[in-house]
Amino acid sequence: MQLGLIGLGKMGGNMAERVRLGGHQVVGFDFNAEAVSKLTATGNLGVNSLENLVQNLKGRRALWIMVPQGPPVDQTIAELEPLLNPGDILIDGGNSNYKDTMRRHKEVTAKGFQFVDVGTSGGVWGLKEGYSMMIGGDKDPVEYLRPIFETLAPAPDKGWGHVGPGGSGHFVKMIHNGIEYGMMQAYAEGFTILNKKEEFALDLPQISQIWRYGSVVRSWLLDLTADALCKNPKLDGLEAFVEDSGEGRWTVIEAIDLNVSAPVITESLMRRIRSREQNNFTDRMLAIMRNEFGGHAVKKE
Image (cartoon, rainbow, N blue to C red; front, side, top):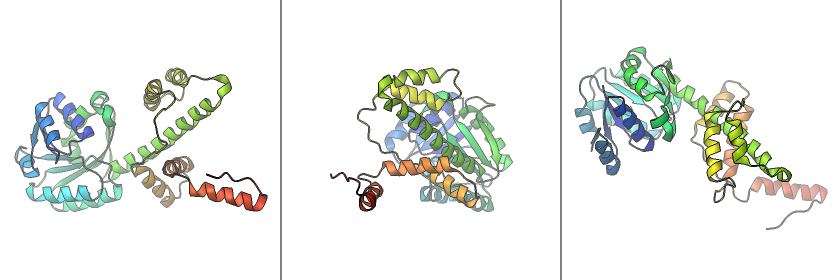
């Protein structure tokens, strides 16, 4: 089976290689000429335009879009549509907002094409471990793409599934990432408490390894955390600055819209935002208020 792939960054490139190793061919395009050349060197076919990409796909075309969420997805779809035949499939494998995906599904199918959304998790480890895929869309294109999903997944019958109609795949991935925020925050806070108990001189890499086996808190995230701590136990050279992809924000907004209490996910998002604030104004406001009503000391810069 052939797959057209738009976007050959680290994740896209790894996905292309896993598809190739599974016996399928990828025809890929990226604005980065080096990424295109690398794809061809690994046994797939890199091309220099969307037109060449579509021309090199035979029969019913399946085109997997791996570009940043928002306008880049709409722009890519708009450029592809004049090149497509009825029944061809567009797949959004990025982190799009599910509401945008619902709109795109409606617009694309109205023109005679098909649209599938794939919430994809696995990151840089996907080539080795396989990808977790939460898939939304109509049954026919999802079944047509089954060989690709079975190849990309950790196993043909594990780690992927058709979860519902258009938009549902990205919705499930959004909640997945919100849960991830909370898990990461819990691990970070727990290890910080361990680190602060100086009288015990606890070995954090050792503890992380202990927890990996038999413990109820074991997880792949803990495995990765343990590896990171072994490489840098004191976190030397790191700045306390944590980005967010946007999906945690969307999860919190959705929880509010649905009247669902989600304090852990919400607070983990707030902690990420706070990590980017230097000389935090909120804390300085608290200090000056305490000084005003209680005469408490204020530290000067």
